[in-house]
Image 1 (cartoon, rainbow, N blue to C red):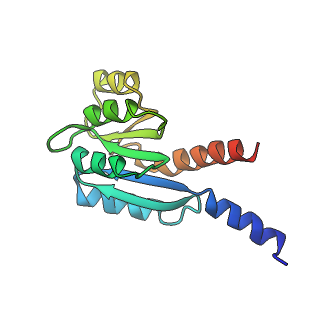
Image 2: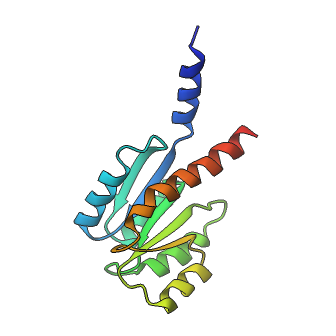
Length: 145
């Protein structure tokens, strides 16, 4: 017989989040991996260096719960990718925009186009684990109902 705590742990692991990081900076992707390494609410992290690479993953069936998306990408920018993501039927990931360009016009445009969060890489990076935990809590509690 399985210990009750083991079944709760198994349920939590089964419901852990899938993440997609889209950022052209190796440093930022590595920093994100370190930041997220100890989160029990994350089971899988995939990464892409461009919007095009990220869209290939999504079009091939990758369905992350959260997308950490840089705005300034080579080729198609993050705002264009955000618009493409929001056009996909039956797929509503939480999108966290990460940028060094925090002009207020950018923020309002990203939020208008469907971003759930807009973070300054230099100032707000440490908020990412709390956002992920809150997203996990919300999704996991909905699955329990």
